[in-house]
Figure 1 (tube, rainbow, N blue to C red):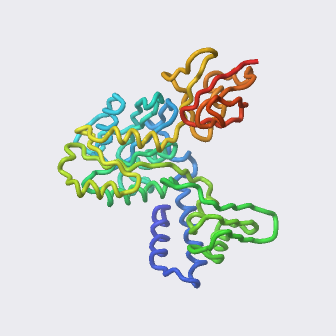
Figure 2 (cartoon, rainbow, N blue to C red):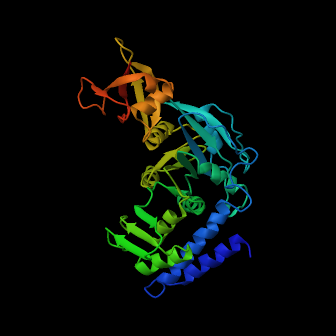
Figure 3 (spheres, rainbow, N blue to C red):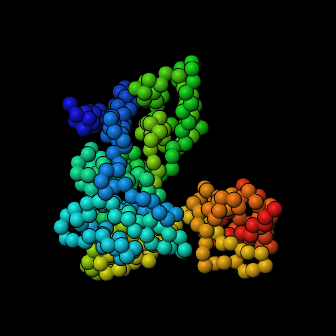
Length: 371
């Protein structure tokens, strides 16, 4: 029996099993078994993680990368070509794009890499088509654009989310606030600071048993934590990536009424556009900037005005004075006596003297004083 067949068998059994106190242990075991089988698909034995391959290994450029994911013929290539000026083959025929096509768009002074990925098909995470390579590249992106046909967004959205979830990608989620600490003895000790509404102790023990985790402290601080959340933490190979749902009409968007447009905006994280008519793309670019959560920092030479033309762009979480210095030149941090910062991260408007560990905010101005 193949891995895909085993997965289908477990999914069918889970669908048949009613959830109650008597079945919670069994369901916990099934969820853990399912996750282990899916891991085999993500990282098949005897090979890498399913990524790479001819046309899929792309040199990374820019401060962040955005991957276009969607079914064939939803206008990904048209949007890519117009955004970046990079030619990505456009055609009414399915599967025109057969490899990853990279391009770059500059937003607020920051170079953003755009990756147009081949259209995926249902069953991609089970290895159908070239889905495994496509989704493996998506796992490495800082943001995913899920491009959907504006005339049938919800059905396609659900299928694509399922494919990405099956490959360990968690969209618009934070890592669960669950701590699993292995120990040498003492069995399984479970503590929770929030009520356990979607998982019970039996299910937790079943999951631990399936992973041969016999001695561990498990602390749950995640409201409404589920068995899937615990499995994700134990597996440890999940990626948490923001996503925007690009509801695209490759031709004219005026076929949609105002009422329908209002409904589309109610889909969380969605932006309706028309890549063919170039409508509402400015809003998409702004939403992309917000989702990437980048930090622009402007330099100020001694005795001169700040240079607002060429910001140093940093990633949130890696935006200290040291990160800023290293992004300009590796020697600057070593030679720095102190830095003066003006902006949101400074305590006063006249500027604040800070050290290497000071965390910068978007549009701060920095002057480095050398030893």
